[in-house]
Image (cartoon, rainbow, N blue to C red; front, side, top):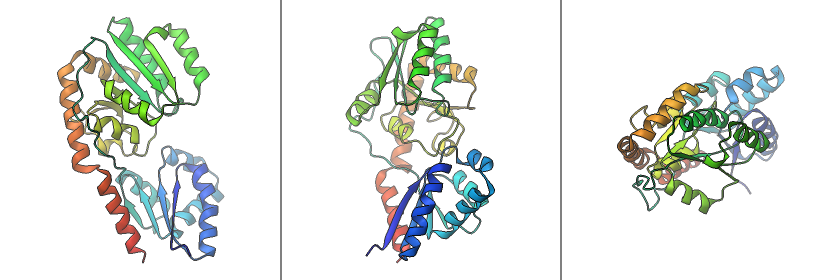
Length: 285
């Protein structure tokens, strides 16, 4: 006897597949929560067929409750499914033991990127901005972790002749990720579409200043030039300027890092996330 089915879904293909789970659960009269983690969902929805759009409306309005990561995503989903019951539950995280990010002692500033290697995460924009930093003679190292379009990434690194300054790590496990955050000075995720990235929350919990974009739930998490720096997606000039500013101003990195940890402690602790989800569970009894 299953009382509640908690379904996770993201963009169009994922949500379309989960429609089948929704129909199956309805046959067994289960209560259903749909936990939405979309990133590029809105653009994909506009391009989808009428039949797909109708199925998604049925899904969002048919489940007992929808959880999403930010107010902006709540508004988007209500535009698709006006009668859907939606609650905003931001991602949460724990504060690691090392709260204060130390400044680089070697003189080399470490920039970290973690995520799917492809256009959406903005990693190729990051390489363009990084090349300009090197051309200026700045001492900087870029660490990239993830999978995806690896051949394209390696080709771009070789074309720019920056391989000695870029360390591509492939898929990064949990322990390695902790070590990377511990030694990083800047975290860069210049995405074109996001929900609320866990990697940004993780970077902030380590006191690593974040450079990211005005997409998805990120502007709710990061107040520009207070606890991070935000740019428009695709603006490689602004990305270069943001990274350059943080490179040249170690005290600014430290100040933003401290504000980042404070933000996590105040609003994004995992215990708060759990309590919000439990409240939704109890409301279905």
